[in-house]
Image (cartoon, rainbow, N blue to C red; front, side):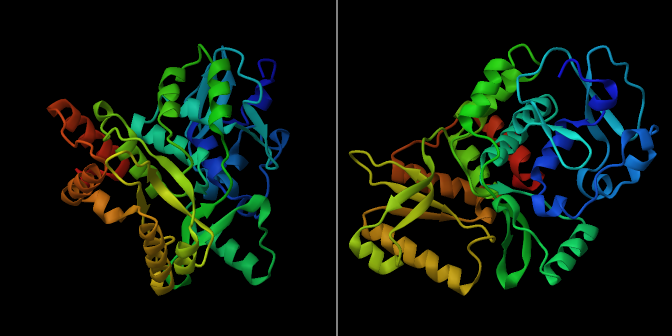
Length: 356
């Protein structure tokens, strides 16, 4: 890495550009030509106008350059200088004429640019089974054309989520791009690099594997310590629950998964909190399936609490949700004034100004 030539390094995506790259489904990338060769475009004019930059990566393009590089003002690039050797595997090859920071390095280079809540959301996404990718108008046209010709690949298991009425959503299902152990190992090797402390904080608060941004938001709001704006309760993400024989008769499956699962104790039964987002809980059939699953879990002695995105976004309804959950768990929602300020900041970072 340290020995890479400048002509090679100005094609290493990092920061937000690398994060955007990792969000792009492979079947979408397959629809786009690679960047022009460097010798064909010494002034980078063709790169700025290339479809993959215009439609997918956006500008400025965040690039990685070696220590000592003197950055000049540019509308096309934002340069990040690396001051020391990077951990092994920090840069990955692509089929599009550039390299990209690995998911772990992408998070590290974002650590100094995002708020803690935003960085934690980015970590949840790369460690989760979803990608929030919103196609541009031209990308949608290319996708529609590929579908009509039957040529759209399902490479690497990525699949677009379909919402109510058959409408494709800006949410894609895939396997996790980054594991907790892999991220921890990267951070060990990255000692001394800028952003390590902040990313280590984020990594320590990724509670598990989430299947949607909504699940990640709820996990952060409930799982972070009160001092950081959360409720400070412990749970397991996407817990597999084996159903009893009677419960199987209700749900017609041998198991189900709880979005957030809270263990029972001597005084309280287990609690399954279900994040009912529009992506997977829309329509009459989905509603019937949700009802059957709820009945099956209740038959097994569990409390089931359904939560919608609107409920977590509205401050008053979120207070009610927290109080209901705390009552079921025997926990407290009491917070100091400083903790309440931290919660306000966190909600703004995760949900926007309308949520505070």
